[in-house]
Length: 474
Image 1 (cartoon, one colour):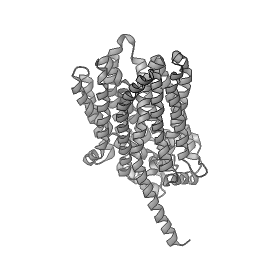
Image 2: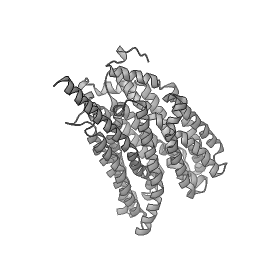
Image 3: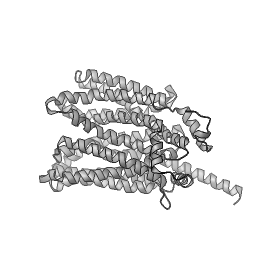
């Protein structure tokens, strides 16, 4: 084949790759909106469903959360290491997304539907529901690990990475806002028609989880399959040396940027899930206005969306990604402090104003977290000469699974019947402040990369250099 023909083929391939990237950019907010359907049911209603429908004790939700975290911590890194080394015959990524999401969403639908068949003895279903949820959590990891592992491959430029982070978050929050309004109306209508709340939950869960299920399926089939993402992921596996799992895990735990981002984002997300999971309890038991929880969640989601939308404008002010993220966190902490000091001492409208500003900057953080986390994988490849994108990025999945599990654990420890209101106030007002301060310290003191260093690492990787042969010193 002549050089001219080779160049022409490369040009055509570059055009096709650019088209696929544009398609992924279009799919990203759509996926977020679809994912919001299942996320609302899982995040807002699952704990309520266990305690009020299955009649499980509160301690059960804490135990379930602990077991879920342990499963994630054991399974996700091991599976990520396997994904980094394994190829299917003609693919590497997209089949796992379909297999894992199918296990996860079908498991959730079964758990939400079981009481409709045996509500009189719902409590005896506890062991079955417990086992199915654990299997569903494993399915979630099977889908999520390869999906996050391709983040460094999708695009190398900071603007693209920030756009994808923003578009995904905006779509997700918009989906949660829309479904957060629709679900109560939907459940009320179904309960009125069938006269049984368990049947209403079962029907709603099937519909909404199917919508959520469409998110990974669409991305797998129309975004990843047959794309440059699969091509590059398979090339990395085929061209690099085989590395033992023990060595891969050793490299992971000596990756300083990963440690910094993991601690920062986990602590930050615990704050987020405290508000999500215990917002209803706070309005009911502390404010005595359970009917006002709708505006609370609307403010929470809509201001977060607006914050994500304004993230790149904030970057224009502070120029550099880590600096921008840090300054947004400083403002968020300031208003979290105001909320803690004035909690339940001011009118709800004023509380919502303070909370809106805090949520705005909490949402804005999503602009930089994913790009900064993606750089951790590139740093790992640069430091060791071994590509372990799925393994490194699996720790990003662990941040979410760990964070969503921790509020029930904290509640199990703190919420005693004799001091319930007092400790709920501490959990909802002061714990987020403590966690936010700890998270910014992890970001500023442990995460040792910035945009300039990330660009130099990318240049070294493109030139085939590693830390051992690079002029860059970290």
